[in-house]
Length: 304
Image (cartoon, rainbow, N blue to C red; front, side, top):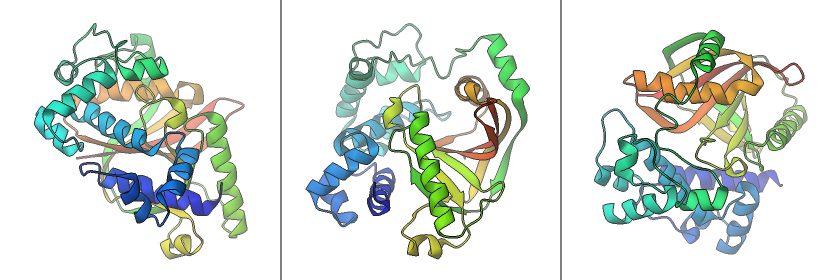
């Protein structure tokens, strides 16, 4: 896949996420990235593994899924507006059809809801429970193991940081992530940029318990101070926004990272009053050894 096409789809994804509350069409977004609607549709699907309209609908519903669980308990009307639905009635209908349970049931964290009638389950075979992520779905042994692997957890203030990024075209599949990093190493070598400790990171945009692995967005990332150099080289740019982040230093097994994230969502955050943006999670890599199943990293989650 040409880096030029990656750059345009990168811009399109950013545009959608920034304007998710507004009406969005293929023609509008294609025009924004200077492509014909036909070519945009084809390239978008080849890079993200899903059609544009499906991507927009999924991101709106997933944002709603998380927004309903915020500490300040927004109303159904507020959620429908911030997620780009034309009315609360249309939002409620779409939410029920997609997840298989109602928005109000989900906000209450109701247990025992059968989601098998939802479109998400019928398409991907994933049964989604509104209680799964936020109501202690891990065993005590699993929770203790995660806590033992956490060396530090605190809220910190961080400056803006610019990264050059290359997205996986196979979502969170390990093959796609490895390919994105292979391309990143090639780009760094071509531009005579030596890989320095602490500058490699990954931007993870999706929740594996809600989103099929192949359409999750993962971006390999390398911190570069000169943003103009990145742009002139045609590289996709991702800026970690200045602000408050929950920082978790994790030192454990690579194979147990999903358990760590489930602990973070189901046990840690419900005990705090932190509001999560849910735009993405940043993984800053300190040490990775696939053969020995070692993963040392800092996880950053933007909070209010």
